[in-house]
Length: 324
Image 1 (spheres, rainbow, N blue to C red):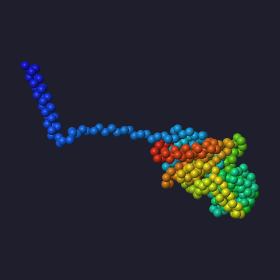
Image 2: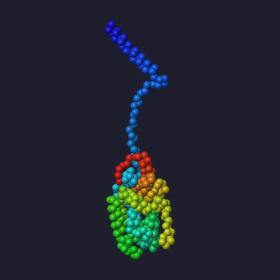
Image 3: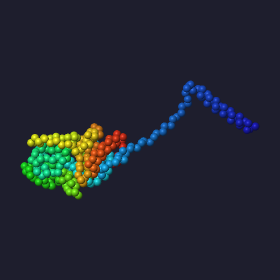
Image 4: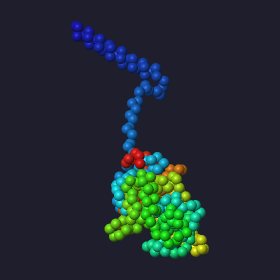
């Protein structure tokens, strides 16, 4: 009998439960269903891609710097001391511009005109300083670099009237002093052109990081020194009305948006070098330096690095190191 009573009670409570649910459903407005609390699942943030990771480059040493933020976006052997070739002329024009008065004229001496050169000058000509600075950089003129060093040496010695003065170590001392001042710890200059001293001894050595610092110094303090290097061709007239026209040695400049300035370098020991600065946005300079590529490979390398830098900034990719 007790078991029957228990079963009746269980059945009674079951009916109450079902009936309650039925009455609740009837009380709901037509078309509505009981609300259920949704469980929100938040996905983990996607890590920024390392776009530089799989780049294939010929260059032995590379650095890419977001100069405005003092951040290194990518580097490869950036502190390795390697031959600079004509990247040296960046320091040549910096020192010459410091030493020689604005608006002065520079005489081309016989020894300057004898330099091995793809942009030679004639002995006895006089050039306006700004024109010679531009010509030296855009045409990578060894004659121009030598003439700037000779004129600056004469000015430092107080012998501006002596046209046959032989270059001394004074100008090179100034170049190395400036390197030390800028913290270019891997850089040392033996000549003003960047030409190899011999088949085994390069003219000048430095690192990709040092050259990036030097280029950064120029675009920050004296950007006008690089103005001419933004164009495919440069034309100038000497004081004696001889016209010179020279092609830019940087054949990649037309493919680099917002170019601020560039400098090439090429010798047997150095291989192909290239340094560029470009704006990734308003007042947002990016500096790219490559050392030890090949004559044509440097332009391929630089294009890859410029394109990847722009993608990196757009996507917020990882930095290999935080600060320069």
